[in-house]
Length: 438
Ligand code: XLS
Ligand code: NI
Ligand code: NI
Image 1 (cartoon, protein in one colour):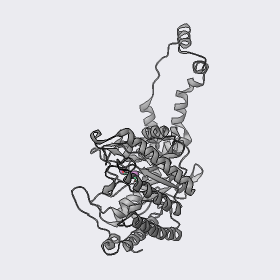
Image 2: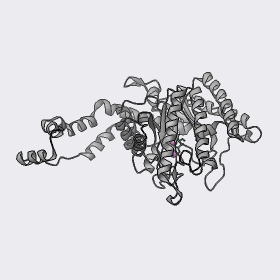
Image 3: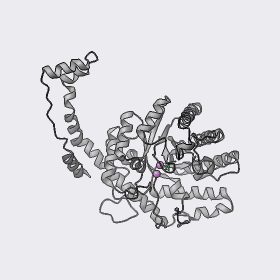
Image 4: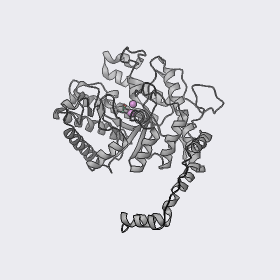
């Protein structure tokens, strides 16, 4: 290893281990519910927080310059390859099966679209070689349509059709790249698809533009024969004040309106759910119930500041409830668990990067095992089944019949003296039950 020299690939050492550079709970080969833990969790490591970002924040400069980026000033393509080398080293240290990237994470920006496009194909060939050499796979690719100033007023929702065209062209190149790398999904996060003020915004036009954009993306997917899933990643705000992809329910309404609900699913991020005023498990459950659950970005927000701080997850009980909803819906298909998470600015060492992922993977393992046991022993499901059991009875059939009107029901209730008695919802009891598993 060139960059992660001295750090051995992590091993499963079991719960008694105190080694920070080992797994205590994540045993990739452990089988439950008919799959190995690795197959259930489908871990992915992201490029942007680990290999691009170097610790700057709004007040401060880079706090952990990375050796692989040092060459960027002299020859950007050499630096891009060095970054790829470093990334694949970390993937192997962690033993994860997947990774995720944006175009700009991997390739140098060119002076023109055509040059950026050429840079992307060059680095994608290099990444493909790395995948072949290591067995790594791509969970998803995506285009960064929010960092460059050309996207400051949005990509698909931009008032300027030149930006719309530039964005569409960028998505086409990134979908090709994702296809070439065998990616299992393609993500669209609408970072600046929204607005700062209505004073300068035509909201209906922007929505229509986005609808048209997505229709073309789906059309392109079929044209190139991409077999993966197209995923939208909801987020309510940040960077834009009002974002169109607010949460899962809003995204579904949008897809339905433009007739895209059978073509697109969602990539749900823990921190984005919190920003939208929901829990992570709420967002997952809504997506499952609408048939659009796809993948997750696993991380954690700071609950006090309210910001999308993209911290590494470490709250096992919360994670157990998220995996409970995922497993209840049948688990991942093309999706997986991507760590869209970054170090705190004072965690400057490469070993911090490894420990952060190791701890997060362990928490996921604990969470999903607790979830699997809760599903197997069914204490919550039995309670829920019982709670709704009236709906399999005669009254339910009668009042649901199309031929029965509201006034018929009024007659029935009066005649039979239907007089429902309140029943406890037993929330605290159920929370106690969950605590036995986590
Ligand atoms: C930002 C998003 C972003 C997407 C990919 O908040 O989470 O990282 O996952 O563009
Ligand atoms: Ni994300
Ligand atoms: Ni985020």
